[in-house]
Length: 565
Image (tube, rainbow, N blue to C red; front, side, top):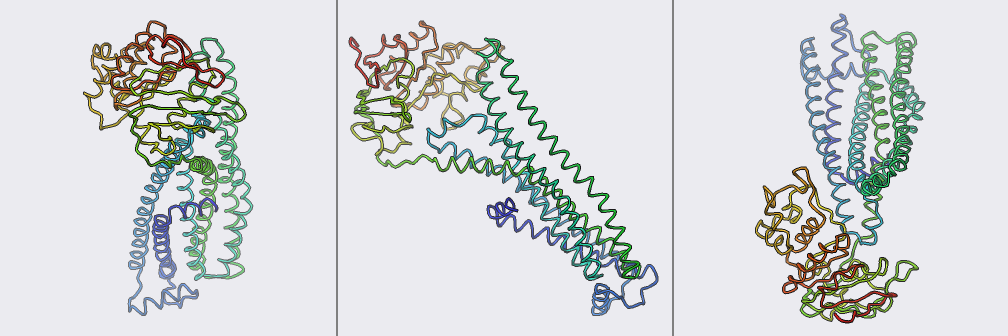
């Protein structure tokens, strides 16, 4: 019920409208079924007798008030019309439910995307890629399914209530007894619902773990295969997959066991019901036949409601897991307090900057200046804090001590989003999308035209090889059965960074994976860009110093100017 209440609060108006349509459908069917009693009385020759049940009396009084003589044809017409109206209302309700299912999945996915993209960098980097992917795909789908099953369960309960009201008017004693016995059957079988819920929770946890590990393995597949260490990864994935299979088996067994046990218990229930109605209560045959029909409807609705609830509790754990991820990301939302527009007309300075990751000191009283129009190199061994300097300049992290100044204005006073729009960033990992070169550079931004892409490729020194491709910028990366070289991939990522005409271009170990000759060529290309863009290139190699006009070496958390540059 917690899940249903949560969704009714989240989508109150749409859910109420859907439930109203379902309730009207049940009322329409209940009114049609009320015609069965006089219909059976007429067909058995008891039409002139005063109806003994409350329902029979109410119908007789209604026809008398309307001055209508009930005939078999009229009663059948009313019965069929009611069922048709019920079907139309159910179709309308199911249409709304279908739209809501799509809306629920879409809404949750968009909320997840916004929460993750708006979160602090420190939160984002600790999230396994597979966990986010699983939440976006699997958990959002299961959440929508849970909503569907929940709405179906409510619909069945509403139908059961309508059937019960009609049955009470035939014989309240038999109806009360039937409802009591039916509720007892549902109570006895509730353990199958609980067992299925546990299996659903296990599935959610196992899918999250499995897909997170699988994504990490696929990102590292090249070195794993190169070292012939697939067996270890395969063993872990196989173990997690088998655990998932066991959870699925428990889920399937619980669902089928519930369905299987409902049938014999229902048969016993109807046998007892017929005995009580005919022998103990001595009800007339038409009333008994209507009661049997009504009670069958009640029990069937309750049983289906229980099965839908079982399906809901299996899937709902995906919703709670996804909701937790969204809430945690929202709690880590990045706050943009600065309002001043960034200009960058003179320099970027880091003054007495200190930064630590928990207990590990990375930067300690660091000072460095990046003049506008310069090619500044920052070198140092891995782990010395080069990337941390970049993260501080881009505002992904803030210094614990000291300041980052843009034209003497502290970065925390500047509109950080607008500052980042002035930055082009080229990472060490040359990850390209399996799409056209054009899309890889624009990233789907419709404001960027073909000529701007070509201009960026020329600046990056990539147009020479791209122009030889049959479709040029519309070629798929890696098509024609071959892969472009590492240097060519790097130049495309540089073009991606240059296409928005940034004021600052950051090369974060972007050439460290290349051979010396290719690295020198790219560095020469970069130097030619300093007339229009300031460059900060970090590397653990010294090749980049040949083209830089300013350089620092990171040692013991401090930036020491490199002599001779």
